[in-house]
Image (cartoon, rainbow, N blue to C red; front, top):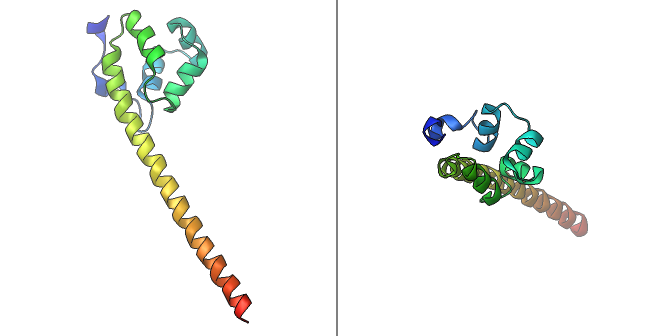
Length: 116
């Protein structure tokens, strides 16, 4: 089965999609049927698909046990997750800057009121 798998690049789905989602969809399975077939919990699949886990060990071990080359999947997952984490960090940075700017404006308004 390992020799029949696509290269890592083709495991990835549309930009921003987890390679685990792309792989599951390639097998035409929903999350719950996929979790049952692989032998892991639904939360394990969900966490891996959303990137809330850095290394989805249970899922990767189960896939490896079934003959899937999980090392290639892990490589794509780690790259995808780095991008997801960087994007989330950038969004948070923008939100913090906006909050700081709003706090500064509020402080200036308060100072003007107190000096009047």
